[in-house]
Amino acid sequence: MASLTTLTKHTSITMTSAVKQATSKQDFVFHGSSSDGAFDYLGAADAHGKVLNALYPTTILKNMDFSNDLKNPEYFEKIMKKTNVQASNGVGSTLCICKIFEDRFEFSWVGDSTGKIYKEGECIWQTKDHDRNNTEELERIKNSKEGLFITEKDKRGNQILDIQVKNPTTIEMIKAKLFHFGNMNKINFTHSLGHAGLTGSHISKEIIPREPDVSYKVICATDGLWAIVCDEDHEFLGKTDVNSKDIVEFADNRWRQQWKQEFNGNIVGNSRFPEYNIDDIGVATWSC
Image (cartoon, rainbow, N blue to C red; front, side, top):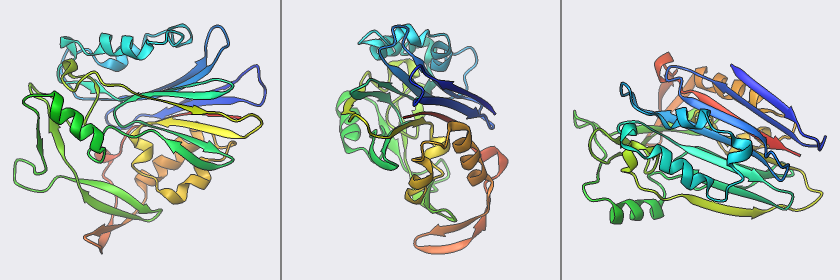
C-alpha cells in the first residue's frame, strides 16, 4: 500500500493520500497545495476498462502538475478535453477533486468517486454520484445520447446485482444496471471521463462555505471505500486523527471479512468476497 502525508505551513492542517491496489490496479489519489499557496487540494480517480493501447484518463492525470494546473478556473474542462478523445474508446475513469480555500470548499466531479465533508466529526455534505440513483443524470443521458440503452439483466437473463452494506456485518444484494454507450463502452454508472466522450461532457460543481475556527475533514475516495461502508462508519471516518492509510486498511479488512448476506429481506447465508472481486481502494483526506 502506498501512502503520503503532508503537513502544510498551517500546522493544524494535515493532508494524506493512500491507495491499495487489488486485482484491477487502477485507482489514483493525490493531494497538495497550489504553487501560490491560495488553496489546498485533494482528489480521487478510479479507472476502468481493459483495451490494448487505449489512452486511460488516469495516465493523463498522473502527468499533471496539479499545484499549477488547478489554478485555472476551467481546469476540469481541460482535463475532460484531454481525456474524452477517440484514443480513450473502451476505457474511462471517475474523478472527484476538492479545492480548499480559507472560506470555502470547491468540488468538481464526474462519475461515482465520492467526496464528503465532515464538520466537527459529522458528515454534513457529499457529492451526488453520477449513477443509477441520480434522477438528474438519468434524464441527462436520456435526452443527450442517441443510441444509449440500459440493461438490468446479463446475457443469461439473470438480474444484474450490486452490493449494499447495511451494517458492519451484513451486506444486501440489490438490483443494478449497465449503461451502454455504444462501441465497447458500457459502465455500471452514468458518466465518466474517457470512453471517447460518449458519456457526455457534463461536470458537476458545487461550492460549500467554510466557517472559521471549526474542525473540518474532507475525504475524496473511490468506491473501493464507499461501497464497503455504511452510515455507522461515519463516526470513524469523520475523526480528524484518522488518516487515509487508516481508512484504506479499515476498508481492506471489510472486503476480506465474513459477511451475513441478505436478499429480499432474508439472511441467505454467510459469504466472503473472492480475491478477484475485492476492489482497489484509494483515499485522500484533508483535516484541520
